[in-house]
Length: 313
Image 1 (tube, rainbow, N blue to C red):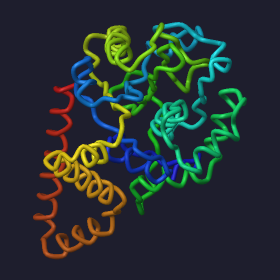
Image 2: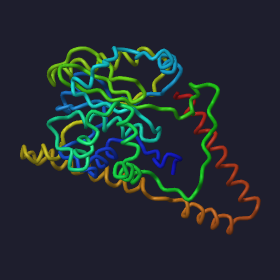
Image 3: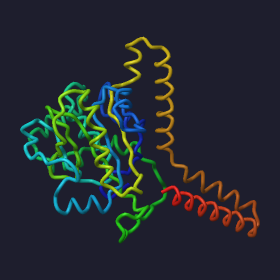
Image 4: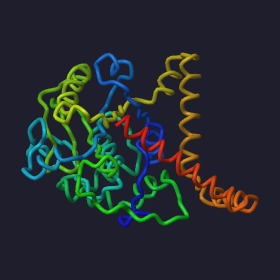
């Protein structure tokens, strides 16, 4: 477990769909986006929000030092416009908080008793206080941590690299985008205020405008930077297919849900004991020379995979 009590979890559509369901949210699904254009978004509409994942590097730190958004403008009057916004106070809950920042701004979705009570409790709090309240929520933390992989091994974290854009420093960040009360907002928990990207009054306008907003942000990074990912917060596609009486689509959605559930169950499984026992069995049945040869083969395979990963980056 991390020092904050929040574990790191995967950025995965199926994981977050099941996570928000466990929190009591109804008729919400999270879907992967493999491109950001209006046609793709219409295919999964209604789109309640977009989660954008990127590598937090020198560009972000430069703007953070000057307390300025990379694109768009701060809206210091967001509370008057009834925009929910929470600062990120814990690193390991970054993705969950990005999803919550979107969900708490939805007026036409049943968040369930727990999250509705939470939203009522923090009404009027500033962003930092809401972030602290989220970090201290036993319910939200428990559900979040239930999707982390248990481990019998204590792994020391790497010391921070002098090169903040190091390929393997693991510093990724999530922000959310929503349309709320006539404006398109970026909700970045590391910023002082929500960031406005102009007027946005309808679902169709959001679908038309959000691709250019995200593409503008991506264009600010070095051309070689490719570490971006997108998730769409949508309605429950399985429920929609059932309501429409579309048997083919129901079957497709059921298969997707079954795959998501299987992957989530695998994430919760600790294979450390199995791996240790397999290694013991191999070592017991092998001579010292054979064991050393197996170890060297493993080292070579690891080096080849690392080299391939670097070539792709």
